[in-house]
Image 1 (cartoon, one colour):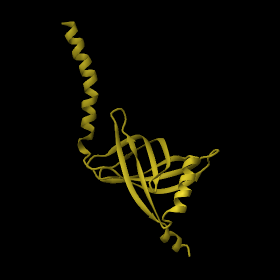
Image 2: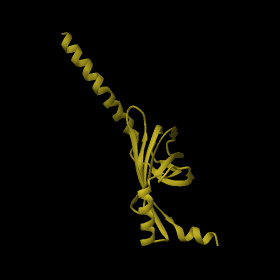
Image 3: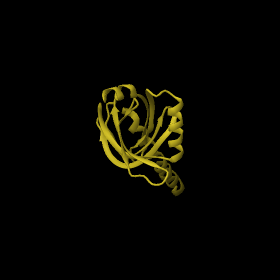
Length: 160
C-alpha cells in the first residue's frame, strides 16, 4: 500500500504544474501585438553596439498578463539586428497595452550585414521583426512575433 501512495504522490507532483500551466493559457486566444516604440543608444564595448529598446506590447485578450522577465530578437530587413534579455517585471492589462524597456546588443558582424544590406537594398523603407517572449513565471511564457515597417522617406522629408 505504501508503494501506491508514493506513486500517486509522485504523479501529482509531476502533473499538477502541467495542469496549472494549461489553465494559464485558457484566457489567451489572440497573440500579443508587439512593435518598436523607440530605440536609444547605450554605451557599448569593443565591436558591439547597445541600445535601450522600448517595445509597445498590446494584449488583445480578456486576461491580464503578469510577466517577470523578457527576451527579444530584432531583425531589420530580414537580417539579424540585435537581441536582449531583461528581468523587467510588470503586467499588461486585459485589452490593454504597456511599454517594456530592455537593453539589446548588436554584435559587430550584424553591423557589417546591416550596412551592406542598406547599401544594396531599399533605402526608403526598413522592415523589422520583433520576436521573443514575456516570462510568466514558473508555469511558462507568452511568445510574440510581430513585424512592421519604417518609412525613412517620410522621416527625412519632415526634417527639411
